[in-house]
Picture (cartoon, helix red, strand yellow):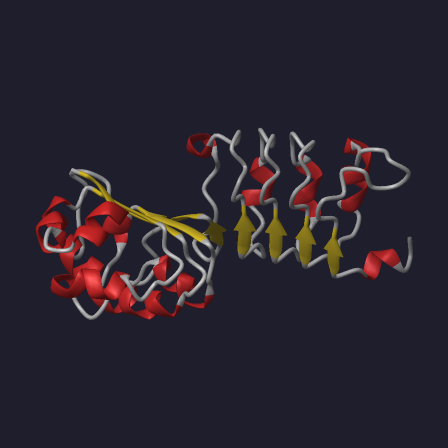
Length: 235
């Protein structure tokens, strides 16, 4: 244990039958919380996980927690959201996890695949800029009304993210805007809204595009049958 306490990276992906054909037990997950130097913990593809223990809040150096495709994960403790060191949390494929009941994380965390834009402490900032170095396969950006400047949207550099195949943009209906929706979308999909079809086609892996509460967009895409098949909009 004295040496294990120094572990910084632990990969238990697809370890349901870890150790003699036995499932990873709750007690083992509790034991992981003693590895207080952990910075990266991969628990992905563990289909029998139902909860993340409260004790994970003790991992004060944890930077990355990958829970992707823990299909039956039902609950994630508030203690995780209170960990200021956690910058990357992946819950892709956690189909049973009720996203509406999740606690709010600190503004410097990157939560994927569902990234919520939050206003920052600065007068002209939001946390959208945290996406600039991420290249997920699935990306859902919601609360885009909280983007405070077009420059923030520009830093995401969407067209450089070659792995995306499922993309969703969502604004909150009737919420206060700092920037017009079309201006934000123009920078997320450069070189401009009038050339949206040409821009979207550069995302070579994209199979599905969902844009909610931006009804003005449709008129710019009607001339391109292929994009209209790809695009699903909610007015």
